[in-house]
Length: 451
Image 1 (tube, helix red, strand yellow):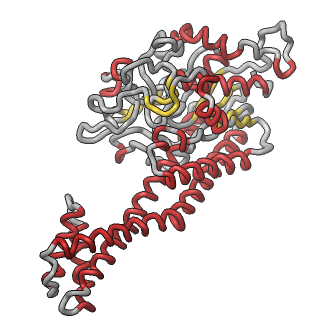
Image 2 (image 1 turned 60 degrees about the vertical axis):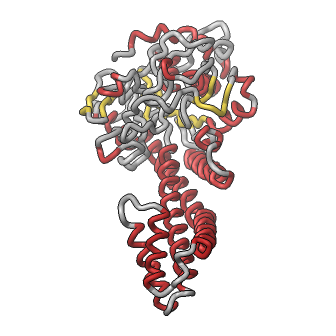
Image 3 (image 1 turned 90 degrees about the vertical axis):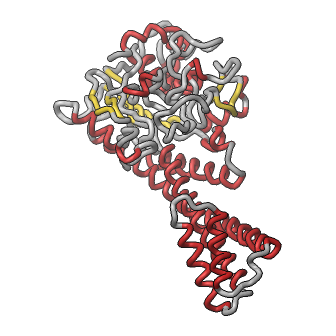
């Protein structure tokens, strides 16, 4: 309930969200009374909707807690938007008060259920898997998945059901994409390393006393070194060279001899990794994203069965256009786009025709924002507003920042006016970016006759 009195900060925002839109969907233009009224707004999702689940302990002490620019109370520069996520702003527009975190904790702080708060979204959360981004064996983020978030809300109800008077917002899937990207990267690296070892071992064995047995011995030596903590490419190569010398290859002492072989093996390894991504891992990742979309749609259908009558479901933005996506090579960006589109298309098809569900196309709106930023009042759609090299981030290890905006605030922004930047960090919006998203959702609510 700690955010209850902050609703006054969003008065001008609420007006801007609905100004000129009342009367749509058949409303009396002279009436400002919404067509539908709600008792509450209940939200499920990940960091994009998280209103401060981690605003506890060391994170709160650092002035953080939300995955955006934290701590803006009156706006920075020309940005009138306080530090609220889109889900909180939609709640403010619908019921007059920004939503607050229903469960807080993580990073060594015990979970607390906050009475009166109905936003269950948590940064890092996946859809069904409790081990989300930043979970760290239970010592990091809570990452309660969407299905558990829904269960927690239903458990708070005396009859274990939605009242039917809630507006429910649902979003998720980004952490499924990041999880699949991690799985894919690890598998591609393994495929490339295996080819590197076999290629180099084979080329060194040719000049050994007994090439038929030397290749195996050299490969085993390299694999054994690769399993040692702290190994490097140089130590792995050195292990191979040592095994080759022991097998009778007298030329391995010359860099002119072995460096071209190492380079050729490296080229072969890179090609193998790329081939794995294109032909095996990439298609598997796309398929996994479609499975995740089914999981989310099944959860939404379950909400309908449990009494929810008005559910807003937003799809993924174009992750390939985020600073994270732009930082990848062309092939990886194309795969990220394919994964995003596969999730969105499957989610839309699974929810098509389901009464009581409003599908909001964030992806297309995000593409418009990047293509024509000036039309949305954006000054920058490619860079991050937060200085991601500052201080100690609780999400990171050994004092290294992980690139998250969780503890970003006005005092550690990059130089210059960032008030109209779209991105706070590699994937999360600034408060202004959240305002744009809230405006989109609220507009769709009005056009659907839901507000």
